[in-house]
Image 1 (cartoon, helix red, strand yellow):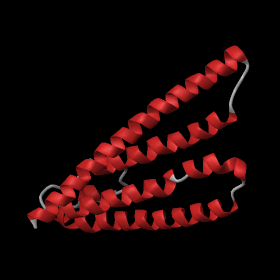
Image 2: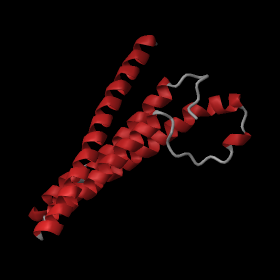
Image 3: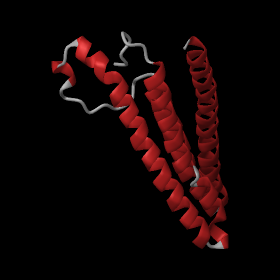
Length: 163
């Protein structure tokens, strides 16, 4: 059992490292592109339409990687008005099922986002290929979220409930 937990913890650590790198580099690239576009438009009366497309998708990169990192730390958005009424022992019993259901829902979103992307790929014109491949962040983002929730559900200790 500890060998499996070590594999899960190592996978979580590597996944967190990759997500932090992607989020930070996407944010830096987003700021650099936006600043470049502002300077080009204001001083040289020149602009590139593809920079706007890339910027919109970089926001999605930052959002999905940030959501995955927040879910890993147990700081994701929770809508649970009943939480304050439950005893700590009941909360501990509900941690696994709630994390597992969250992972399952994100996995369903991943499946349908991937199906939508594959359909878009079939009918995308040649001038929208950049946006098409940047839009892969949506299924990838849902996949990483589901992976985080599944890993959390199997590695969360019984006495350590994420707040």
